[in-house]
Image (tube, rainbow, N blue to C red):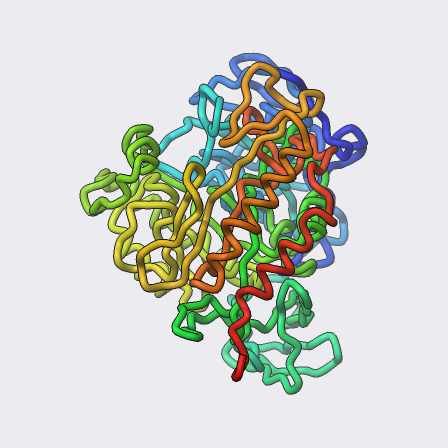
Amino acid sequence: MQKLWTEAGQALSGTPWNDYPRPQFRREDWLCLNGLWELTHTGRVEDVRVPFCPESLLSGADITVDYGAELIYRRTFDLPETWAGKRVLLHFGAVNRIAVVRVNGVAAAVHDNGYLPFSADVTDLLRPGENELEVRAVNDLSHKHPWGKQKRDRGGMWYTPVSGIWQTVWLEPVPETYIHGLTVRTGLDFADITAEGVSEGVVTLADGREFPLTDGAAHIPLSDPMLWSPEAPHLYRFTVTSGEDRVSSYFALRTLTVETLGGVPRLCLNGRPYFFHGLLDQGYWSDGLYTPADPTCFERDILAMKSLGFNTLRKHVKIEPERFYYDCDRLGMIVFQDMVNCGEYGYIRDTVLPTLGFLKRKDRLLHRDPETRANFLQAMEDTVRQLQNHPCICLWTVFNEGWGQFCADDVCRRLRELDGTRFIDSTSGWFHQANSDVDSLHNYFRKQHLGTEDRPQLLSEFGGYSWKLPEHSFNLDKTYGYRKYTDRAAFVRDLRALYLEQLLPLVPKGLCGAIYTQVSDVEDETNGLLTYDRRVLKVYAQEMRDIADALREAVRPPADGE
């Protein structure tokens, strides 16, 4: 296997990821704990660079992870003198999978979801001068918990596991009474903001207008509203002040509805039919695996895909750091967010038979383990709570291709109770049940077609054409893709034909969105529009922009008299 560095990875110096990790809930004073930590694994001690997992090039570690064994991280820190008299919160963006945290030898936190953040008030565990922080992490690759695409024996569509700390670790001071979080609900001309943990205060918009918090809530009416869309991603920035605490944030105004226009069910953004022209985004990086070398790498990917005319990324069975969603919010990129799968994957049941056309199956008796089901439902609830304020997220995907699927209709209803403002794709690909906003198809091997359900049609995976550039590829011996090419001209010709000859005619008949596989190559997979090292964009803007224009025009309903 080739070790592939991104340009950002080769240029990495100093403390990595030293930007404040929560752009949507920002305080000015904080202490980044990324950088070199001591790592002990199976009796061996060496340095590791946080926030990169030890399996990655960027971590600087030279170990083979023994899955199920402890990774023991240690480092020391001193608190700034200006923090005296304040509470101190310790935050972790994500640790995969089980994390036991100690401060000065005393237990501070335990967490068992490898994709979601957690925090602890460690004020009473601190001492003057130097403090010691220890994290014991175990990646047991348990399928009873969210696991994504991690496989001990990676290959094909399964990837190298990610263990230990893989997002930012930081400290921040807060007053005795502080804002614990924000919940934002918006419509076409208003925003309702709730500040958790406080009852009084004030919300101040960037233009200086102030709105008081009453019982922790403020209603903000907006005249002449500026709506959010990929074409005009307007954000309203604001601060919340309560006592001695102050946080900055933002919101956007947009609506998502299903409407029948010209006899065709449509997905509508801000009341108008919209074509969700998207790509599958695995969120893997050649030198950092789950974590890019620098936060600005997210921006580069987003802008590269926008330059080709795409307006949507389907974030595939992974939850990213907050910075990714912020960049999508501010740059204008819609996100279809997958829940991270629990449960066992069966090759025959979940891939072979559906590919052959056996797509119908009742799911109440699938994945019956009560612990696995409970863990998925809890993770789904936590995912919505974590990401709900981001306007870029327009659709939740519950189950992908039957992976861990159970009682999808009930789970969809539960998700709608948590968030009734977004579209829901409850069964992406197959094993469809009755409750979903879209008829969601995956089609890699046949001519593209619509489904049979009377609801908006979504092609949630297709394409996967592979043009491999060996000098930019991870695996020189194996190539994974759904149609393979040896020259760029043929690859581009057939990619354009796929859109213009097969997809475009389906749009007037009801196709509302299409998610091509995929943004970038990933390990054995060479079916990305970017190479795995992000050094080559395989297609040019002038070869793709007319496709986006045609899809946008085709979804527009005919005007009266046309």
